[in-house]
Length: 258
Ligand code: CA
Image (cartoon, rainbow, N blue to C red; front, top):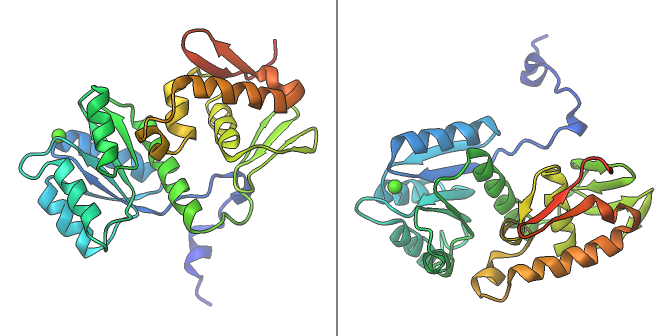
């Protein structure tokens, strides 16, 4: 009897303990071939299926051939600019809703905001770390999928002492007792726990835990983060001390309580 493809490939080990592998299709639009290759390499390693386009025109052709799950779009492209590609995608009913992560070399706040106003889901300023890019892509897709359907089944579990955060089920417990968090508090805690031991700036936390729409609308300021962290700490009770204030910069989730 012939082996099924799955059996031939070997049964996956410890599937429950692994992050579910994304198989989403990502289109990377970047004219600098080295950067495009680096991004493609990193995303492929994380399980994404990646296609690259070196110009805006090629990108639009690719999108209309098969709609990707997400587009990483460099702003500075020869010919058709990233902004023009973005506008074109947002103006077309067929492509209006595809999530877009903008890469921009421009550091000015005004430029970043205008990118979001054009309809990008998030932006990343060059130079960026490949890891950061993957995290942003993960986050955008998670949000996009969350809007379409509830996440079912078990996901990843983040643990710190008596604190347990179930990523898929959106449940946080302390010593087995469920803690009720708002969606923003949940995302905030998740980001901090995922990056435990590393300081996260208020701005990073804003971009990860809040909707980019609110940020683009200018409704959020970094002190919003302080307010939410304060409330989150209160709700976490004895585990609240794990969220450490790094004065003048941001917050860090402590791996061990000293
Ligand atoms: Ca470029």
